[in-house]
Length: 285
Image 1 (cartoon, rainbow, N blue to C red):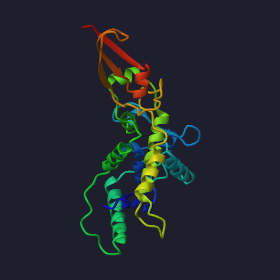
Image 2: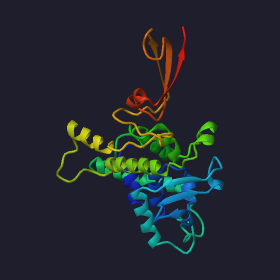
Image 3: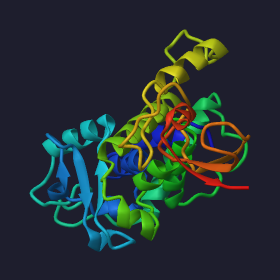
Image 4: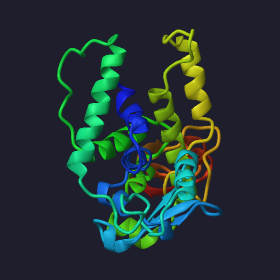
């Protein structure tokens, strides 16, 4: 399957299923969570968030999805043509949510086949379309977030509503709205780079320096990992998983002799760790 065709096919499909598939690709949420979205769950103006109620979530916990710019624009356009009912994706004027996922997926496959033929000069493409499920779109988003090096692992997991450990849920009550929003914005930008064809007359080939410059621009403001609100790393690369080190303190050095173990916090970089943002224990000989 060509890299651009699924999203381009969604663009070519009429509402509600075209925007529905686009929302799946932009948000990474589950198919029923998106299909049953209501206008009452959305704030498209100030907060620009979508709050999915616990009753519709797999973990039975409310889930907040910060809306990227692409999502807001699409939903605002749909809002202008909405019916009297409250469901966003509907064939009954909002009275009931969409259903018939198999037929919708078959229609999307047909659009993909058309686009593949166009890319192949009007001839049937070689090889059959690989089998896929709607849930694969969610997996695609999670994989795409994983490829964004400046988005920490825990933020990637929070975006797709994977439940943190009990310990984290107990001691970290921060909502990470800004961090999740930035992750989804970065994913939206990456998706746009994949699905939009190059400007007419320009080559598909991107020089290595230009590619590096584009990646560097994306990475100028890293998304902070969980537990990083108290201290921001300076002059060093952040450590996103617990790190340990040990050093032997020779006799006569400050602190006495012995073996000192230092634990670097997930939130600190090595420079902060050396400068005093550390916990240490000295074991006497």
